Image (cartoon, rainbow, N blue to C red; front, side, top):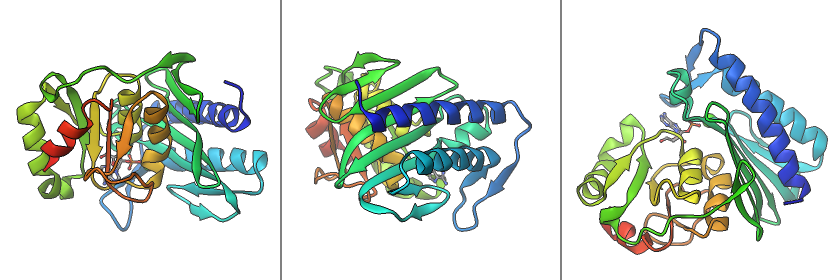
Length: 254
Ligand code: 2AM
Ligand code: CA
């Protein structure tokens, strides 16, 4: 794969991953975000500061949408979408499933995406029309065709249990397993490489899903909203599967 935005995203994510690992080794300071019961750590801020600085200098005209800074307006044509630390709760507890998610859009289309999980030593990358990789090796979604044989994953905040509880129960009764791993971007990367056969979540933001959406599509999977309608980065809900499982999982969500 040779493409500038992808190489930029890979280099920046790798650098930010080292920052996260440095912070992981320190005694952790955990603050509550004011509006939501959402952990934000020094690590989120340090990672985002580095990523935004690097992207601004490499792509001075581009818009940057980043979780902690919001939108730094620039060109309407080019946009970076950044989660400097996805899986903050995991990170705060030293659970290694956390990542950096960086996506690049041109003309409103996802072109490049990187999900880098530094504590796992894995970097997932996708380039529109060129496929997806993990640590440079091509990846593909699984071939599991029935929910009964599927390992699925979901996510929800404690306050959202009522909204997701019914779907969680329905799928738990029918699938081989349901995990709740706590990092939507990484969950999508795991669908892309066939570890999970399907993933759904109700209330996500563009930075949680942008890179992962491209990874799943480029690995041969399907991404929609949970009701089966067309995916949109600002839709909130997402259903990502290997394709074969899509309709059965969608129906099971109720
Ligand atoms: P974050 O770690 O970047 O906040 C897990 O369900 C997904 O929801 C994660 O991708 C997480 O992203 C996001 N999320 C946002 N707010 C959350 C919260 N208060 N608790 C748990 N996850 C949250
Ligand atoms: Ca985050």
